[in-house]
Structure formats: structure tokens, C-alpha cells
Length: 269
Ligand code: M1P
Image (cartoon, rainbow, N blue to C red):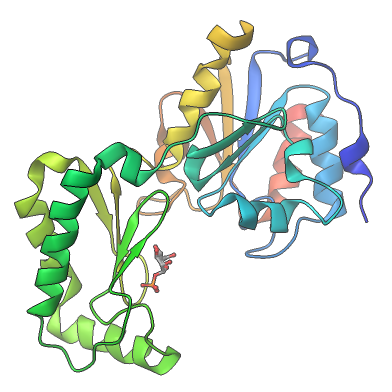
């Protein structure tokens, strides 16, 4: 078990590089994909935290981040100055929760129901070989829409993915939503096998930068150097927007070992 979490760090305003913050993607940057962080990485982060502020930025929910970065006895919010889950919709600063946000809060019930009714009608009219259950999953930061349904088995997922490649089910569905709800400010992503995600435009990882910028008002610290480290920095990858944002200095890493190597070189750790 790591003891790194128990280390003492200077207050944010007393760090040697007080206008610098390093933000890290989680999967394949701080940890191997869907696995736990190593003690070696925690040690490097702890050394870095003596010099500047550090934060994690994951797309998954906070529970997942705690599983990968913390342990049963170490709260992952004690290991970073900032923790951002769901791209920053859930946010912690120095272990304390900041104001969060959600898809339903943002869209409002009336507009949401118009969207949901359209989606369910569209699915009802679809003729596909199999339909199972849970055609729309309501998540905190998005909705996930699946023509076959999220209850599909592993085999049924593969079948649908193949069917979709030939018969093109999801793309026209997304086009119909874009056409019918142009003023909603939504983005769509066909990232997996059986579904697509619907979320507010801009709710990618750049969302968390508002919390970093708010620090100027809160503590007087203006982060002039916002470093971001991630592995999916190519266009279409979920680190692309924050990596290429004009407010950040992007660093593309191959894996956690490469991330540690770059940090040691950049910050002389
Ligand atoms: O990570 C990519 C996608 O993975 C799942 O998609 P599917 O169930 O279609 O394979 C979903 O979790 C989806 O939200 C996610 O974008």
C-alpha cells in the first residue's frame, strides 16, 4: 500500500511554480487502461506537487477515478489539488467538492422530453433484426442511445455492430437528430458498438478549464501555464480538444511510463 498520499504539500500559492498546473488524463496516462495507478507514478506526482499544482481529468465518473487512483484507505482527492471526473462536471478542489453540473440541469425537462420522445418514436419505427431493452440510458453528463438496446448480449452487440456497418442505422439516426434539434447545441459521438452519446457541445475535457480559470477569483492564482498530458490526443480521441486548446500546453504520452519520463525531463524530478 502506498504512503504517498500522506505527504505534506506547500499551499498552492507557495509552490515554486505557482502559476503552473499539470492536468492528467487517467486511462493509459496515469494508469494502465482500466487498472490501478502504480506507486512509482504516485511518487512522481508527489514530487511534482511540491513544485506546482496537479489535477486529474477523467471522462468516467468519480467512483471509477477513486477505484483507479485511490485505495480503500486513500481518498484520491488527497493525491491531487484538483480532481475532475466526467470531464469536470464533478469537480474537487483540495478535497472539497465544487459546484457540479448535469445534462438534465443544462437542458431542462421540457426540451429533454421533446428530445426523448423523438428518439423513442424513431426507435419504434426502426426495423432491425433484434431489439432488446434500455434504448436510452440517462447519465449525469449525457444520454446514450442504442437502437438494439443496452441489454443486448455480447453476441448480439457484435451482430448489431456488423449489421450497422452494412445497413447504416446509427449515422442517419444522428443526422435526423441534428436536423430536428439544430438549436439544442448538442454533439453526438458514435464511439462504441451499439449506441451513440448525446451531450452538450463543449462538454469535452476542456470543460474542466473553467474550474482552473476560476482560481483567479478564488485564491488570486492565475494559472498561466496549464500543461495537459494525455494519450488520445489525435482528432476524434477524447483528449484532442483539451490537448489542442489554446489555453493549454499539450503533451501526448504513449503510456504511464512515457508520462513519467516526460515529467522527469520537463520538471527535473
Ligand atoms: O467508450 C465508447 C463508448 O462505449 C460504450 O458504447 P457501446 O455500448 O455502444 O459499445 C458506451 O459506454 C458509450 O457511452 C461510449 O461512448
